[in-house]
Every structure is written in C-alpha cells, then in structure tokens.
Length: 142
Image (cartoon, rainbow, N blue to C red):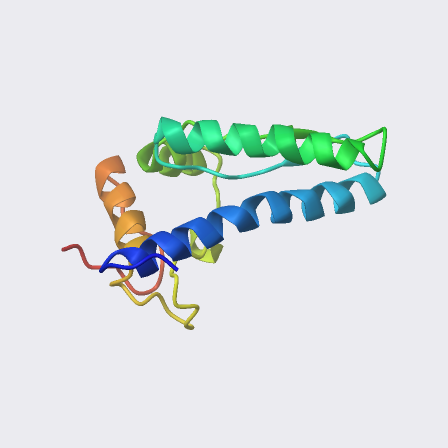
C-alpha cells in the first residue's frame, strides 16, 4: 500500500475509478438484455478534460469487453461529460429536472450533510448559476 498523508485519498480515488468500468459493464449487460438501443451514462467531471478522456476510454473499453460476449450492444452516450457543474444545473433547470429528488451528499443521510465535498460542490454550482438550491434544507457555503 502507498505510504504518506495522502495515500488513503489516492487509494480511495483509484479504487473508485476501478468501479466505473464495472458499473458500466453491468449497465451494458442490463441494457442489452432489455434490447435497448442506447445506454445513457450521466458521468460528469466539471470540465476536467483529463477525467473526461479517461471516462471516454473506459466506455470504449467496456464496449470492447462486452463485444467479446455479445454482438449487438447499445451505444453508450455521455451527454453531460464535458459540461461543468453550473452548465448541468442550468440545463436541468431548462428541462424542469426535479432537483429536490437528486442526491449529492456522500454520507447517505436522510438530509444533506452540508459539509462534504459533494454538498459543497452542488451548492457552488447553484450559486454560480445564480439560482436557489431547491432542497428543503438550504446548503451553506464556505
């Protein structure tokens, strides 16, 4: 295992990255069983183009691996991939997305914790879009 103060964070990040192709393969399998023509993968990395490139490579890899077992597979679409958080909020508002049903908190509590990175990132996106976060409990900014 890597040593040092950031080693746990790096290890958790690497482990999480390995789950993406697995989840994508499972999604492809389910979509293929349902005879779907496309699988929408709502991944988004806040305009981090390195992460976007890795996600694109992962989708190509997942399709290649899945084709070893099956000829006909749904296409993988990533409509949010290159959008930043503010653009996702604005697009969702334009499409009347019920944001109060969306969950960002990393702790999985009944209400957002308001302090984890995901809660802060979500609030920053709402602030940048000049809109009010529609959850019952408003998030605080740092």
